Length: 169
Image (cartoon, rainbow, N blue to C red; front, side, top):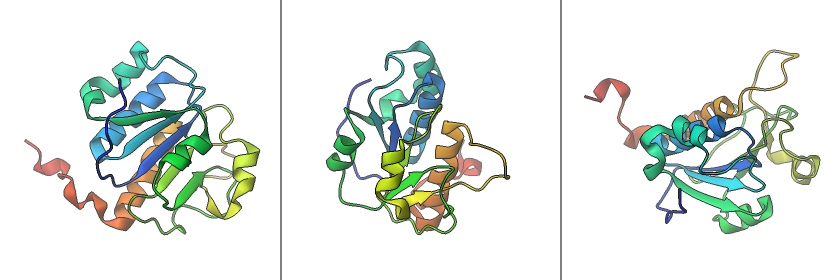
């Protein structure tokens, strides 16, 4: 996998310190299918050449626009000045209350601990939760990214350039 030049994209997906290769592979596949760019923030808990990472992404890796960054600050600085939405189970506001705009940045934490407190405390108005039953801690990372990204695509109508599943051969 290599860093590819960035074309116009509907959304930027940032994974802060991902730990589980199949989750990152699934998110990479999601990014390839939606035209979104993937940003991985170090430390990454596995080798990017990991077999299970590639297996989860299957043959989509050549279509993934991916960049790696040394810190979350580096990742955000490298991106256009757009809306930033930080996903956490600790937010008061849900993704249905957020107004997404094309090109927004969706930030997700690691599987075991989520995002650091200092990130959540820096801009609490940007914190967003995905609704779930009380007493449940979190969704799987790749599921959370899927839910959030497709809600953002729906709100912004940026999905209209994609083929519908029933239109595929």
